[in-house]
Image (cartoon, rainbow, N blue to C red; front, side, top):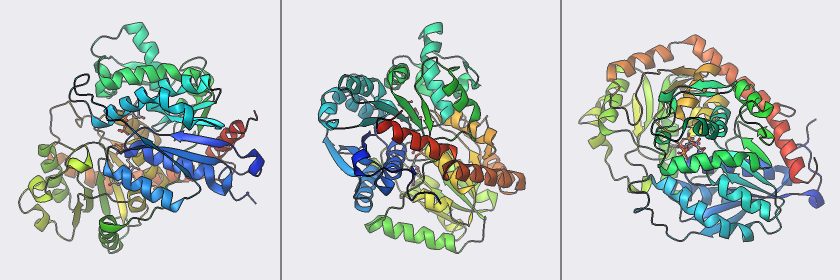
Length: 475
Ligand code: UDP
Ligand code: UDP
């Protein structure tokens, strides 16, 4: 029978590698790093430290960090007190999470030395790659880059510098044909990349170039869901000279205990879900990073009302949760909450999404396709109606559609496009997806493929074990 640990073959304390995990900012990065930390420290296979830059940008991150270290004392905590970083003159109006990436990137060369004392390996977030990899090299610590999005997006990122070198870094990026993976249409290229001076673009290109210098790349994806991307990354078609690619996903959600107000709120929607029939509920969330425009929120409300199905909708009114003072009734319009009472539950607070997705009442996930959300849908086999909004999400939506995890209405607008998607159309697509038995079956087979990948001997399990072996110094 399989040994009782994620990586399967612990060798005892003498051979325990010390791994330092360094995430960037935002729940989309912290969540998969936390999952990786737990997977690596399972069975005491690795001595894991997680770097936490304080204060966090969002309060969701602060709560997640506290709950993680409370539940998993074996994971060491390395707090980083960050000096305030004023980006307003250099990058006016920049997204606060990207500003944090920049602050980390500028301080990393100084900070990394002490953090890496005695370390067997560094695992740095993709957003920090181009600063972290050279510093680790100087300190003779092997460095790995953890890519928190899809393998397809990783192939795009790795290839993009080649594209820029060939086409020049002018305004507007055309279709990008990632060799042997996917010709990414211009309309799916992350919005920011059309502007060469954007803070994100600079980081993106620098980090893309740094990948070849790392000792390995980890990605929260699995071979069977993105076979072309994984194979082309490994085979050298995307970029020659990439280090080994460890597809270790989908990393499993970890059970954390909420406290206070969050716990009470969780209790409410849990009880509500328990009272709904199997596969009857549409779960609607656009992730932790962005808020829909107010007029789009109104149309979505009308669409959910018109679709006739039960729904659980997490509404965000601002980019950073601490700044969100909006009232649900103002955002949704007079009378909406009363009209849908009983059939629809709308909340502004954090929900334990992985738990929601595993609830038998779930029938459909209307999702922005942040990659963590996609992996959670894959783990639970809940079909996705993809409505990408920004960054890598259209690339991920295409992965969803191609893998059979759900449907993507490609003409639906995202940030920067003016068209508002109308209520009637939203209602129609939700109804169609809820009634589609084929989609449900395909999503269930993605769930089975994900389960096989992470099971003992599966592709992701083997990749993680191989990564640990290398950290131990074996080859
Ligand atoms: N999440 C959650 N509850 C919420 C909103 C988000 O648990 O109310 C989790 C979600 O399950 C995922 C992460 O936060 O693990 C968000 O990452 P993702 O890549 O899906 O999107 P992002 O928020 O980065 O756009
Ligand atoms: N990303 C990247 N390089 C960077 C910063 C981000 O490749 O320098 C990736 C990130 O992992 C994600 C996508 O680009 O796949 C969008 O970045 P962001 O941090 O906005 O992701 P989110 O916060 O939406 O999860």
